[in-house]
Length: 120
Image 1 (cartoon, rainbow, N blue to C red):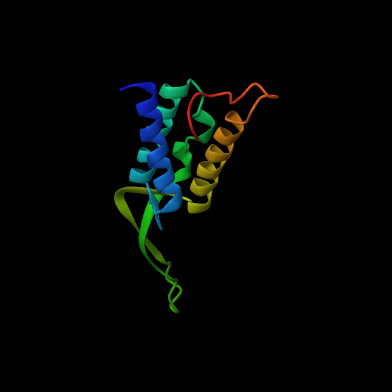
Image 2: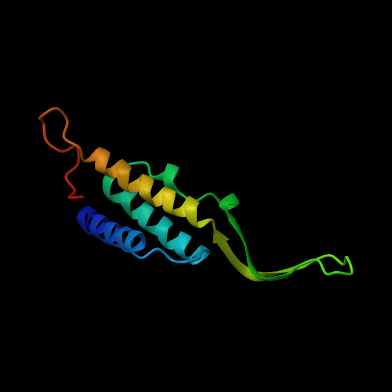
């Protein structure tokens, strides 16, 4: 795959995520995001690691919870056995920061043209 193809594929996936954000950001969405970031790194040589979702941001998905009853018994929270989710705000901030960063990278340098050969 050429650098341009990697760029096009990554940017398409990222645009789709930004335009159609999932209501719940699961570990599958985070994996897709990381794959797109890796493609961007491979295509451009830019370090995209500041935009990755750290493992500590992924928490077990809550399936249900029961409040403390009148009897004073503790509440119960049930978690998905394998699926983890990321805070929606954190995920969208990382995605937005990535787009802003690449717009900055593409900004003209005092009349010398864009810094990158890729179209943003």
